[in-house]
Length: 397
Image 1 (tube, rainbow, N blue to C red):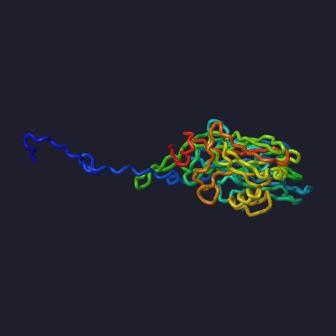
Image 2: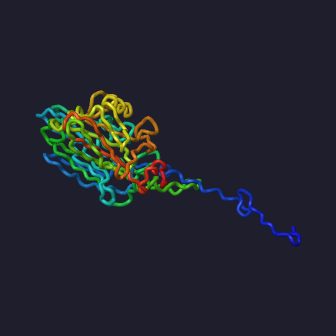
């Protein structure tokens, strides 16, 4: 068609869904989440044994082999005693987990990411929100042999060291692609610190280690839709470290240091009496009621029985006897902020972590029954953006 003489030429505006007369291309599909494109892998990487003595000993340093993406590490402890005859072997307090004097996880740069005593490690497994049943004493393979028999003093337990925070989206999983890379250092304690009544002979402790990992992700599904090549917020680390101080009898307070400035996932308080240095004695010293303050906000002001009732219901504790399978722990009072998705601790969407800044006050206060040592095992998350809300979004927002 020709334009009439003297008439202006009119440009035609492309219609919806077209680009210069061509159909618009659909936006690429978002990648499948990281867990979709990987396989889970659990492979033994460490197997060492040592004969227990009257002193602490360092196990051979474990440099973890490359596995792809590290979710955590399983540790299988087996103490074998043979030929025991004269002693009536027994356990008490923190036994037999006290065989571990100290466990330390180092990152690629040599920084301490997590550190525990054996008992505190057990308590973290029990109340950390990482498994459906996290209590090591409730494992179907747990055993601790007592009495005068030839195998008295033999025991077996399994502990987990977590890096992945939430299995649903794999947040917290770390790259493990080089060697030397992540390192684990473990000290085994003396026989006297492992038992209430020791065996008449020294046992042999075997330690086996199993990294729990994800493989490297495939590039794309057969349809062409890409797989995410990293977990959300790659570089996110969860730290677990302890601190302690002496608390005077009567009205006292404890201000937390570790984790301040970061989102805090949990705090496990432990109380040991000064005069009778046990958790059982410390249990009676716990304030009733106790208060937990975040700045000017009162998070807790509850009595001991009310607290223990909620703890038992949340973690499925069924035994009224402390320091037993599915029972509470004497002197141990977890404060957890990961119950926000289902009724099961650890099924979290990270909405209730405590939001702390550099100068935030996080204080435990109340009337303590006696002078005691209060320790706090703190679990906090460090993200590359240092943004708490990125943890909720699962992105770099």
